[in-house]
Image (cartoon, rainbow, N blue to C red; front, side, top):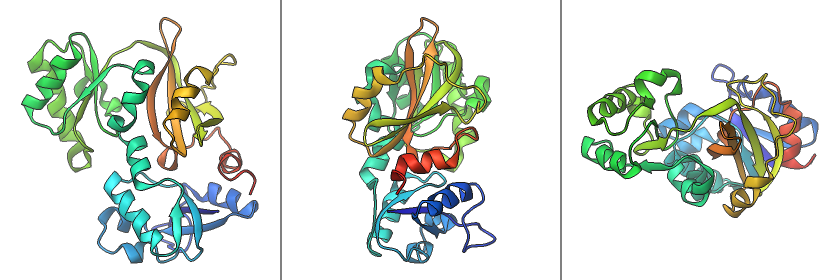
Length: 282
């Protein structure tokens, strides 16, 4: 097995500082580590150059910065030409990375959602009416702007079309060229406490920890991922994270599913724990 991480922009032979602890942990258990030029992967102008430092063939796991689905697929193809197969295929990455890929299979475990194929006001209004009245949270296929909660994320009343569109317009302005897919409306549910990030390899929960936004808020001792395990396993995805939050009525709800390769590791989870979960101690 091979671990691939982004290179340090200033020292391109070395792992990016953010992923260097995981790279060291992998090397300590005998896993080969290679670096890639993340900026070049994003641009896509010279993919052979981006992966030129990957010299070991075999099956690989990427741990790095987020990539758009089409850029990840091109990355996978460039590696394949060098004899490297990413454990997560391009299609599997898209299903995990973009909400429409995973939502239908987890609809009963997560807030109700409706989305658009584009960003036109008419498309937004159709999604808004499909979801029905009440409050909602806005995002795109891959990300919200929750740090701009009142201006670009939270919609108090879907029946107020003008106010809802003002939030959507601000969201589009802030996301700009980083927008992924269309607009997603998620029914607002009131949660208590911090989110819990769970890590799944081949449908099995291998790690439970805090969310990166609240790394020191440990999961409750009574937390149990088993109620969602069957549905997550049925997705057939090799490496994902599932973020859960406790709703006010005491039910754990899935807030987000993401591809584990580009999910941030909270500082309170040791890099060795993640590497061991991924590579089985090699």
